[in-house]
Amino acid sequence: MPAEQSSKDIVFSKQGAVGVVTIQRPEAGNALTREMWQELYEIGRKLHEDKNIRSVLFEGTAGAFTAGSDIREFSRMTIEEADEAFRTMEKTIRCFETLPKPIIAAVDGPVFGAGFIFSLRFDYTIGTAGARMGIPVARLGIRLGAAFLRRIEKALGTKQVRALVAGSHIYNAEEARQLGLLQEIVPERQLREKASAKAEEAARVSPGTLEVFNRWMDETTDDQFLYADPEDFHEGCLAFIEKREPRFPSVYS
Image 1 (cartoon, one colour):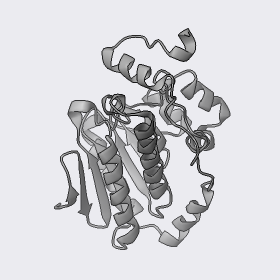
Image 2: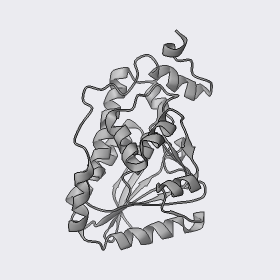
Image 3: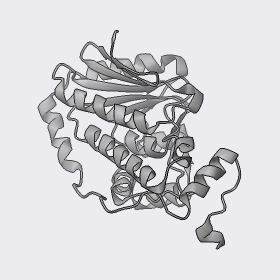
Image 4: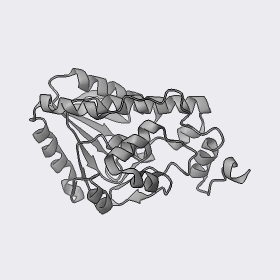
């Protein structure tokens, strides 16, 4: 299965009519850097253009799908740079949301932060008992835009938006399955095989039928919104890196 596009951290390859995207940055829990989000966007554009690819399989390395965006990288950014990084995430997520092809995912370990938002696009997600899903941004000084929140609300309802964001709740595999975030829980040794088979099955469905899903997305954007809170963002990042409780200026001032 030769790689169509490959970097140190992301590999895009073809498996018959299936496009396979593998996140492989295990030393950082597969956390996504700004460059990786841009690379995912470019892969998304290729998937739009390549008519021979009929479905997509997303996977991570064993023990981690993605821990979300790279907080260490964020801690070195200015507020403006961080906001631009969030816009790259939004552009990438939107690119895959408008992709009229089934997306199957093989999930082991954490699916956090913007990676969790991204996962809401997946049509069928197979996980292991070690899968964990959530978006614990309230401790990082990150303010979710309306588009991000609408995605959670559409998938899970208003109450779960508050539990996830304000309560920083992390769903275990069984909770995720009950909420429809996971469709199956399988042993680790079966994960890749099951997901690959499902992606091959999905490659045989009608593209015309899938096209209607594009109409679900609200076109509203957050062009004037600051995703990174000017007061709390850097303190949240530093507290995460230093493994301590954050002392947000907006709370302690």
